[in-house]
Image 1: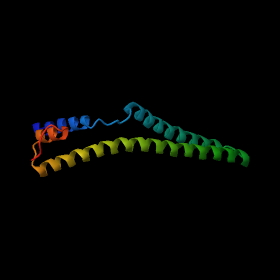
Image 2: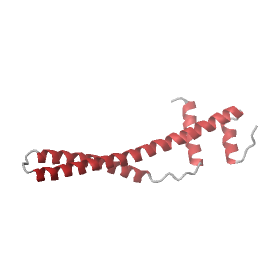
Image 3: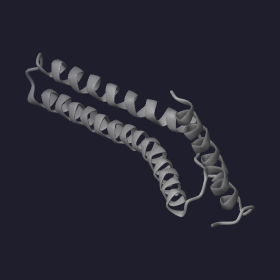
Image 4: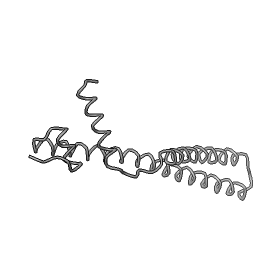
Length: 130
């Protein structure tokens, strides 16, 4: 990366830190993502096990019990997928929103003719705007 890119990354990090946002626990979100993935895997295993178990049964009542178990496994898979998707998208959307805010401020600073240093001081309330 060039020095300009490094400066932009550092400025972005400083701007994000200056927002003082409460973003929640990354560990907790990571655990929920892992739990969602595990639920998906367990649900698929249950569904396939119920299906293969029902192929050797001749009594329709036993087959229906296995079908119910397979449907429960598929429901578990869908629930796990939704949990995984929710926490994956929330992390992505948070980073995307922060980037949009940062780029919007940079465009505003450029339109007002501020330098990055003057813009940071003006944001903190210590500088004057042109």
